Length: 296
Image (cartoon, rainbow, N blue to C red; front, side, top):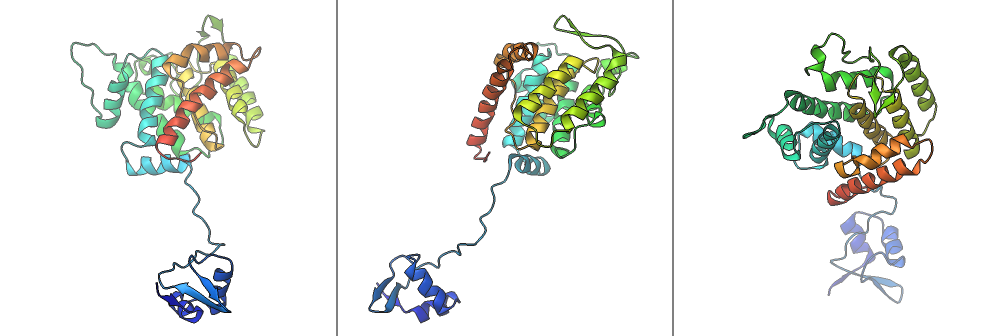
């Protein structure tokens, strides 16, 4: 092994001799040793990184979703989120498309069927839901407001058979009373004020917690502001708000559906039902982030 002097190393690394001695005295140059008062430094020693060198901050999930969306990257977390969130949220509302069919539509903008009858609305709402996810990714930092929520509904329901009905308000609040799960919801004439009050209360909180987001979701679903599409719009809002406040988002999958519905119903009596269900869904999404080596 050949050794260099402090002066030689200082010249080689283009730093001061004092810096080299400091590196040696602090044990930051592997293999360096003293002979009397002289440092002997291996000629193949590597220059230590400066302690104050800024480490590159890991990219956030939101940044990765935005990058993969912009680059049309296939096979990453954006790709998986689009398919899984769209399939599960639509399936909860009665869509008969399979997960594979949803994936084919996203990946190829086509769908293969054989000896099968498909509902055209299922296909339209699937492609529309993809656009809704893009919208929440692009506008995560936007404060939640009525205009944004109505735009999500407009995108989701555009081009469907519902949009061709005179009484169905696409992108606007309902015109006729409706029920959900055999429970009456607020009358159409009350929806506007209820939504304004809900958003005012929610937006008054500077930092939203996981439970704040769930509480908003429960109140939104109970108001049921739209004629149809409330569940999907509500779950899109939850995903957006989780991303905004650096909370790992989640997707309610089919086998959690009944627990999710129970949680919505029992929120006032026992919040744990919905919290635990959504935390279980969050753990599944975290497993995906682990696979893609995304920090959270």
